[in-house]
Image 1 (tube, rainbow, N blue to C red):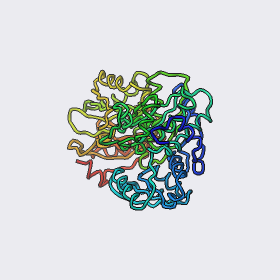
Image 2: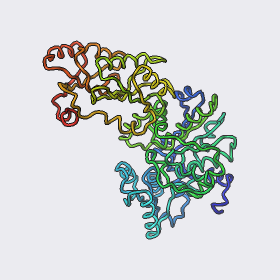
Image 3: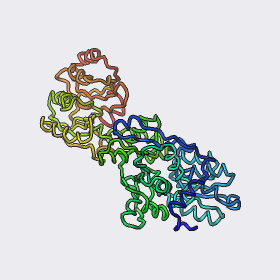
Image 4: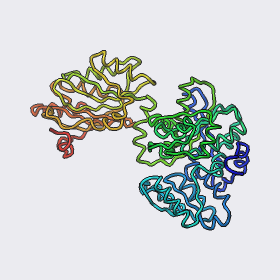
Length: 515
């Protein structure tokens, strides 16, 4: 039987007889209670993040390798991968007692290299990209007589991934309206679609891609495989420039719909999964959840049941800072603005009072960056909590009506990625400046207390605050205090009673901020 002639019924048989449970477990299908309540639909999470290698990839890799002949296993296997497939192949080879050569780009993080080596894989580092590594793996395969284990474009790999759908339908036999599946090369969705359409064809299979890595969607639209010139790397688990021949054929016939999501939506989804499970999935693992939220908002559904496959949790720890930063904006629970205020006494306080009296109730300040730069006006970068999508435009308009010209930056990539961290610098206007680090209690009125206790003659020349999710906030303030007011300033600090450290003599301040 050739690949071209495999039908859903053929794949059904391959899935039912797939050998995956020597290395994989039947992962849980759990309701996401908080997310379901918020969306007014039932959301079920298929926990492939809980596999031993924290990804579904070991299913397909092992099923492929378990079907090799004794002669092939004696020579060994090879693959090219910088991520989850590499660990799946290495673990499967260890279980089957065969040699596994894993070709990885030289840019692969040490964490992933060590993980593969820890499972017994022979790591070969080559090239700067996956394409370079793949080309080298083909050369090594021919030289050493190894069997290539493709990450997605192989019927046995596809069948192994299809066991996930078999488990979902066995674990949940009630109403199921759609299953949402992340797409990289297409192996997972090909297996899932084949099983669901053979057993319960009324259940929709919805494919999800990043908006900057949508090779499958572009290929379906063009009715032929399209090679992307470049792909975004935030969701590295789905960053594939060219989908497989077999996966394209299957997806074109069996997938009901496709959805794209952006980086902010995925960060928000990672947070949603954490809130419900206390687990952190990688970006690719959260794609399905992001798509469900987008689908519900677009179709205004209620009372339906959706399953999301959490396909991986191999997240680099240092990426969590970025995810946390963008999650609130992705959910539009935070809005960002550039606001122009008059550089005059009391304007800063008037602006803070306006924030406290916005329509719909007061908003918490999540971020405030300001550096004195002009004599006539000041530009501040402000983050505020919101109650839902679409509020940022209304808030900006409200600021402008009250004399504070505002620019909505909520969807501005430059502002979100860079400008928010670069507000500041030297200023010739910042004479007699003293720099202090404060710890403010995270409660309404903390900033206004600070402003009300200040003497009218002292001017705020620098202000930096970012909410850290704790019950206190760390704030950097520059205050222009004449030498003659030193005693009064010390009394102000005692009355304020907020913990502080004076940084006026700090060499970093003098190098980057002091005039």
